[in-house]
Every structure is written in structure tokens, then in C-alpha cells.
Amino acid sequence: MQNDRPDLQTEQFIDELSGGFRAAQVLLTANRLGVFDLLGESEMNCELIAGALETDARATRILCDSLVGLSLLERTALGYRNTRAALKHLLTSSPESKTAMLRHGARLYERWGHLYESLKSGTPVPNELLNQQLVAGKRDFAKAMADSARSSAGVTAEKLDLSQVLTLLDVGGGPGSFAIEFCSRNPQLSAVIMDDAETLGVATQNIARAGMKGRITTRSGDVFNDDLGSGYDFIFVSNLIHIYSSDENRRLVARCASALAPGGRLGLKDFFLDNDHRGPQWSLLFAVNMLVSTDNGGCYTLEEAECWFESARLRYEERIDLTEFSRLLLARSCKCHSLVCSAAGEDSRYSSHENLKIEP
Ligand SMILES: C[S@@+](CC[C@H](N)C(=O)[O-])C[C@H]1O[C@@H](n2cnc3c(N)ncnc32)[C@H](O)[C@@H]1O
Image (spheres, rainbow, N blue to C red):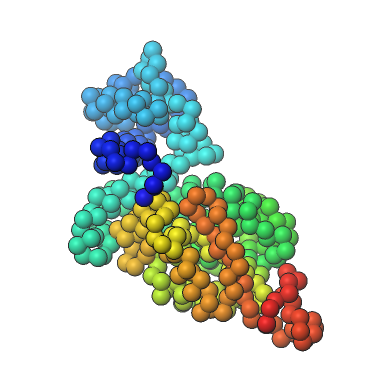
């Protein structure tokens, strides 16, 4: 937990924690109903809003007032309008929209409502317990991931030097946000996105929209069972390992390692925990999210990831903190490419593309 909160001992701290669901559910419900999209740039009174959304007028007034309390709507002479924050992030058409992610949030909220049962059974919350109107497919999930990657892809591309990389595989690349951002900032780079066919449908649209058809291709498959290709300078794995168990991730890392070019690098981006399991707070809570959503997923420590690297004969090189809780670990393939080795002489080993000296 966060240890720097001044009021940790107070009743208010407990009340704030226990009441957090209220604001979350008001936001998720307003998004699900389409309140923000309906208002757009205009002002409307409660009766008009309720009429358009086919909701109860009294209930709609209570919801809109609570949105005013949360600074997402403003009161006007006519009724209500979106605040600047809502216009920026809560309209489906906004370039910085979070609406798909919020629809995903509404589904997650359902799962979290059954946390007690997960604790008793040790299993994720079954889909049958969820509101069937909220159950969604892979395309919806991919769109939610695109919302969430909108800023993190930029931060990652800024902090990760790919200037010497020619070929990159993005495993579980979802809507393609990271591959697109990497390629747009690194003109020499071409990328392959691996994911299931349905998710790749969303990626393909995004690739075309970004004008990257010539540089980014897709590869439908499962990282555990299908061919990854080979000879990549860089393999990027973002927000995938939290779906799987530690043993599965050891296998995943080994499969990636064998698809790397000599001297190539693997980047694992996830919500890694501190080795003592005391933080970051966001990641500790995200592990609960994976408890209610997956069979064996969770968040892992940096030490655990280092073990996966070691057993795949990768050399751990660097940790890049992308945000307070999103961390990227980089490891390098130590395998030697015979042609490269013989060309470079017995004592020095050079990777094919990055021209890097590798320790034997
Ligand atoms: C949480 S999303 C992350 C998407 C993207 N990498 C990002 O960081 O925004 C996980 C992605 O991995 C894909 N995925 C899950 N298991 C996979 C597997 N075994 N093989 C390939 N892709 C997988 C999912 O379909 C999904 O698109």
C-alpha cells in the first residue's frame, strides 16, 4: 500500500477506500448509457437526456448531478454539459477517447463484484455470473487495449531505443498500437504483430489507417504453440505475461529467445512488482484483477522475470520505468550466430544488425 498517505490511521482513509466503487460505477454507467456522447458539445436538460437514453427521469437527474460532483458534467442554465475533461476523454469520437476502455471497465467491475467467490474457489469469476449484456468479444477488448495504449505506446517508444533495430516481433500485439508507434518513430524498422485472427482484424485496420501497410505485417497464432518466425532483432511482449502463470511465462520467454537473432533483445513490459511484494500499489491491485479474470495470471517480481531470462539463456540488461507502475525489462540473446562469429573472428561476436559485441 501507499505509505506516504498522511491519513493512513484515520477513519477517513478507510471510508475513502470502501467508497471508491461509487465514483467508479457512476462513470462506468454514464459511459455505458452514452451520456457524454449524447451531450457532445451541447447542453441538455434532464428530461431530454432521459428521453434520448430511454432512462427514468428521476434516476437520470441523480446520475447527472453525481457527474457534476465528479467534475465530468457542469450545470448550465439549460441543464447539463460536458466538462473539458469529458470532452477530451469521454466522447467516442475524441482522439484521446477512453470510452472502449471504460466499457471494458464495466465488464471488469462485474468480475470484481465476485472477488469473494474467487477467494473461496481460487478460480476466476465464470462468465455465467456476469451480466450477459456486458460480455464482449476480442474486437471490443482490442479496442479497449488501443485506448489504454494511446499514451503508453508513445512513452515506450520515447524511452526505448530501437534506432539500430531492423526487425521487431510484437507478441500479443493486440490492436497494433506499439508496433505502429515504434515504426513511425524508427524509419528503418519493420514489424510483425502476432495475435489471434480476430484481434488482428482490429490491428489490420489500425495499420492501414496509420499508412504502415508496407512495414507492419500480422501473423495469426498462439505464442505457445505456433511458429513465431526467426531472426528478429527485437521481440516485444507487452501486457501479456500477466495473463499466464510463472511456468507458462518461462516457456513464453524461451520460445521468444529462440526466435531472436544472435544478440537480439527481448523486451518484457508489464506491471512488475518490487521483489519484496510491497509495491507498486497499482500493480498489487492489478494482480487481483488477474485473479478474477484468468486461471493462473498475476503480477510478477523483477526477480522472477530474471529467472525466466536465465533459463532461456538471455542476459538481463536493463529496466526502464515507463510510468510509476509500468516497467520494461530488457534482456539480450547470448546465442552466437556461426556466420557472424566466423566473420567477426574468434574472440569478438557481433550480432547481425546491431553490431554489438556480445560476451561469450
Ligand atoms: C492485455 S492485451 C495487450 C495488448 C498489447 N500488447 C498492449 O500492451 O496493449 C494481451 C494480448 O495478447 C493476446 N494474447 C493472449 N494470449 C496469447 C497467446 N497465447 N498468443 C498470442 N497472443 C496472445 C491477446 O489476444 C491480447 O491481444
